[in-house]
Length: 570
Image (tube, rainbow, N blue to C red; front, side):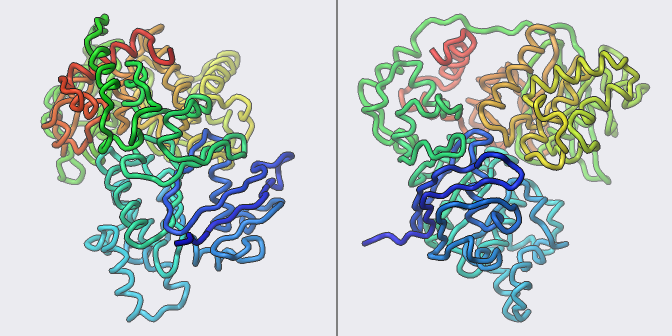
């Protein structure tokens, strides 16, 4: 049976009105009805521009010059209207808050139907149907902004799946989600795509997480061009991920360390159904038996001590009897599902909130006598949502602001601001308006602003969410350098288990306001009970260890040791 094309690019190029060169060059691409396609590429590769051409934001909201042809469901986009295209294409933005228009979940889902002047008697069951489809049927009266990251994604999706929308575009759908909710989101996209024969385009950096459910094709973009249009297995067997700065799945890295023959391995992109060849299994077994020097961190004296701390918002307990000690020079991951209490603990440590009971000590001193400004001289905090931190109109003014408020000389202000901007790959953009840059670039601005202060302890809430792998590596390498060279204590609040395994030594795990584990990363991430209670997911290293019949804890520890000795990339 012949497939029906729903998206057809032919010799297509696009140049923004404000730019001197095209952003997209010679795009030839056909996507068929019911396909699920992953669009990969580093920042600036043209992924978002490509999707905005499909949904009509280009050329109707963002002006520029189009050459060639783009048809969506047979309709030439440059001759259509954004209203007509919205009937064919639904988009779920990376920043869900930017997509909400209603004061309740029900109102938000109903927005598109209200614009069509649909009678209320017909609208209400349609809204309920869409909400039920994404698992939000019981939340119609809730405020959208009060929902968790995963729930916001579901509401945004429900608002765009009415009627005959044939194409669904998901822009970084996993960026704000904990591991469990990421799996739920990938499952939901898969179910809607398969059950309703919708075409799905997923723009995402987290390749391994998207491959939790099969995708039909992967489109790899670089510098505004399509450099590969291939099956997932073929992509993983090639060197394209490394060449274009895309992070490969953890299990694939382990297989490469072991010298596995990837070209002979079937279902390479589908770990759940992959059966290792006899040769590859032997390679992994030999790899596991290699002797390596286990990395043992040597932390210093206590810098933060949390004793029996309890905290509540409006009499609603959020943290209960938390005890932990953070020592100088440690790299710690705070992990757990959305709403588990990770960010609340960070806000308590920074003094933004204060404990209802219990005590927090900084370098042995009870911090209740210290102001937020005094605590801020010692602890820097980068919030998850950059829009909550940015106050200046221009990037360099934002990075300089805290230094200037503290009365540093102009020479020091300039020197530190330049260093921080260069480390975060923002110096060439220093005079740009903050409003003109992407969500991921705003994240880097906030990181630069805090790093410019050179605090002793740095807390970063989801520092790599929305970053491509190149910027991810640059930021993490800089943070690791601060840790190794200057003894800075680093606390990462993260959903990214890949990040935790490769870049932290200790994991502190929360579940429903309780601290349920505090141990070396490899022990925590191989503990089934902790994984289940914290709504995490087993890493692919755990799965690979089970496939060859060895201890997951020991296998993950072995992998980390290989990372520490610099075997990555050899």
